[in-house]
Length: 209
Image (cartoon, rainbow, N blue to C red; front, top):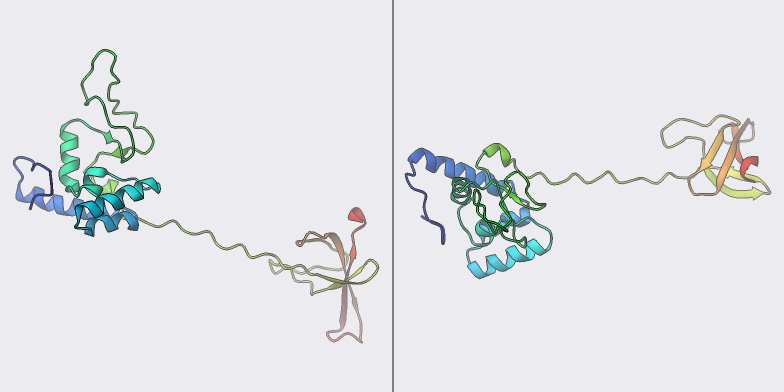
């Protein structure tokens, strides 16, 4: 069945029909989910309005295919037949001069210089890989400061000596407090009175005192 408003291409063979079905499927699967949803909207006015809304949100919308419901393979094939290498997306200025036409004072179509946001003309399935959503960056886990509360002037409680990367501070090591309190020096001393046999504390580094 022919899509709305589009003329069938002459001499369509059964093998071309199979290519058409494969291309149409690949074309839609290459789009972001919000754009893919346009294919299932049967009502023309609703589909047009939704497509234009997506365009204003920054999605690349191919108006004849995505907004008007024309067949992707037939549209792309006929564009190729007319010499187009790219076409403007929705909301872009239309092409004013067909490929190969040159008139004095007119801006000729430049096949090798598509403007930003233009749509590539191709029926090569390799140009339509399935859409892959961007990978969200791993959440940044804030470092927990090992410097506790100030116990007496210049002395701070040590909350262990294990850094975020798993390494351990040794006696006399410099430590930069991730909470922004400056640089400290880590101390430890054996003590039979400590629960784990070791006393740990920090003093403010003289460089930042």
